[in-house]
Image (cartoon, rainbow, N blue to C red; front, side):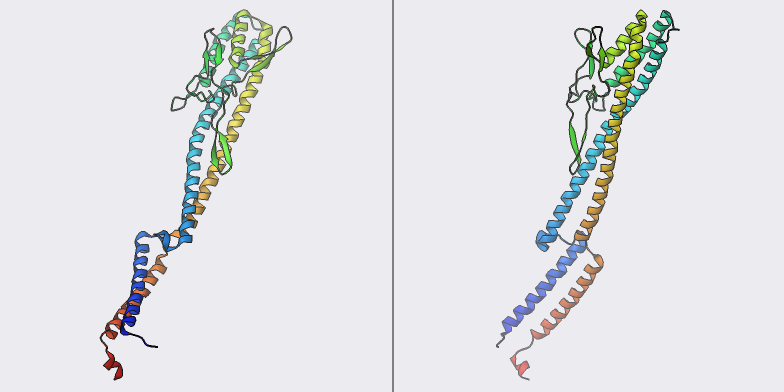
Length: 307
């Protein structure tokens, strides 16, 4: 087989070019701290890195959503908890007023506090968040949950729409609440023995009227009705608490997923400095040897080989 001088030179130069490319690639890895700086370096690893980064971004998005939802639930929980305390005091007053030992004047005096408690409950029902949205208006966050209509009657102005948002893969939680959930209507049997729905605040207004008129029968009826209202508030508070626990668990899971995937990403993407430096030193020695050898060989001619 005949080997020309040009072919020998081309092979030597090509081999030195390959070695220089490896050194350049290693230097880039050391300067960027990344094993893969171009998808062409390792297509399979590059695809894995892209998938991991996308998954991490998704989990971080869940965490941000969870924090936002947690603020909303915290406001709902605080309002419902305070309303429970106010309603407990209202129940105590109603039980006292139902006692036959109290006079009409005593009951009128109790009504003064009942009216104050009613106003406190109304204020809690119309709680607004930091953006000025009413938290118990369903999806109609721009409207007061409870307001007086043209007939002077206190009515619910929100809707029953409940929206949910994703807080994890195949996991969602409700982010709003209608006012008729914590401040629900009760069912009353009227004088004709028919069941009618009576609004939360109407029950309190009826109690106030009964205290003013010394209507013992209506006062005693209010004891049971307010107990039902207490149960409704308690159920609502439990629902909010369960949602809060759910997103707390989901937040922990999302954070764990992020840490795990970042660790995997680091293994795939980050430069192993010890290996990279060793490889670069080896390639630089090989390049220097090749350059030295090529310099000597390039000066030889046919007569040198004949000798």
